[in-house]
Image 1 (cartoon, rainbow, N blue to C red):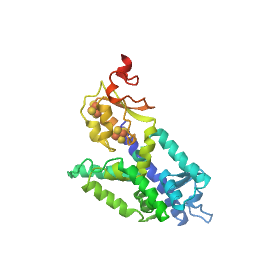
Image 2 (cartoon, helix red, strand yellow):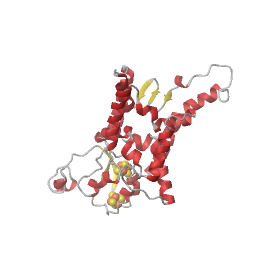
Image 3 (cartoon, rainbow, N blue to C red):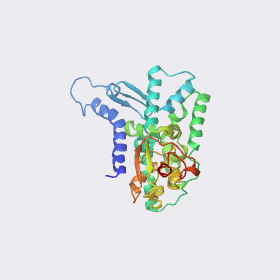
Image 4 (spheres, helix red, strand yellow):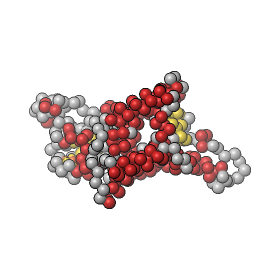
Length: 300
Ligand code: SF4
Ligand code: SF4
């Protein structure tokens, strides 16, 4: 089965996970779902409740690391121990898997962006592959935290398109809807996947964490026929595949990889696969000669 099919199921499932508790509770409170005279639990009393920024699962607080940094900067104080532990847990889990696995497998904005990208290609709207460097989102994340400290409130949370999808579906709220509309217009008219690739501050935080990720795309150089279908499929940025395709690395190392598997699905030669763990890194010039981490170097 294609990894992309599994990923779509997970993306939609995650959206449902965050939207269903308040919706079900709403029906229950309206007497449409639970009925009866008994007390109806509020969503917050359920096993899982919250948004993609902050949630509670079986009593454990989960907080996105950017929201935690913004809140601490804005309030100029530390979070509670439970909130700090929740932010750390999220950072460690995504850091160990692949930071931007959040973008590829969980974030609803990426799901919408991939849909817009597919539609744009289908109707034949051509946009540049890249207009902003993908590392810009790390600077955007730093600017968001600094601005939060300056103005005294978490600025990205107020306009987050991620929260917009969540709140819009669950509560009919419009906060962040303007950002979401601007992103869709930019992706249709400015450059391919510009928000997720280059501008999203949460993506910037996960890009940094992704440098330690243990779920990686590995390449079999002998099988590769250099057709570039993997680069065409990559939603993160085709540039992140270049060192592996050029024979300078045996895996996609960039923190920007979302572990989405689109390249693995697209490869007609089965030259790409997921691998657990990270290989050591060789200098590009020694990759084929003396590097102990290179399959070719080790074979000599
Ligand atoms: S390199 Fe492959 S797995 Fe990583 S983001 Fe690009 S398409 Fe997805
Ligand atoms: S799709 Fe597969 S065969 Fe084609 S360039 Fe990428 S790794 Fe090589």
